[in-house]
Length: 114
Image 1 (spheres, helix red, strand yellow):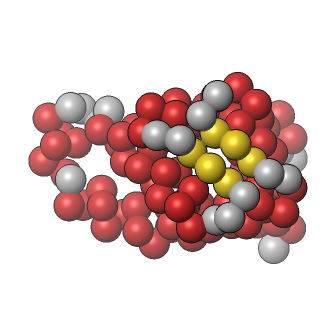
Image 2 (cartoon, rainbow, N blue to C red):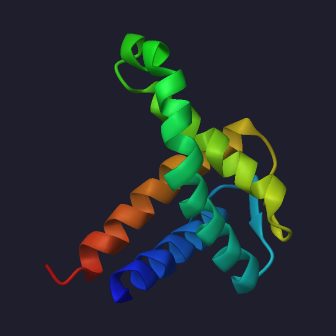
C-alpha cells in the first residue's frame, strides 16, 4: 500500500515538473495535480491496454514507437477530465507524456528501496 501511494506521489511530482518544462501544460495547484496523477494511473491501467491491443498492427509497423502517441493521447484525455489541469494540444501532450515517463522513472529509481 505504501508503495502505491509513493508511486502516486512520484507521478504527481513528475506531472508538476512536466508542467514547468512544457509550455502547453498548466497545473493550477497541488490538488489538480494529485487528481490528474490519480486519474492518469486509472486510465493507464484500464483504457490504455485496450487501445494498445486495438493499435497493435500500427505498433508493430512502427516498432513500438506509436506507444508514445498513445501515451500523449491518454495525457490529453485526462486534461479534459480534470479541472485545473490543462494540456493545450497534441504536441504538448506528446512531449509532456515523454517527460512525465522520464521524470517518473528517474524519481522511482532515485528513491526506491530496492
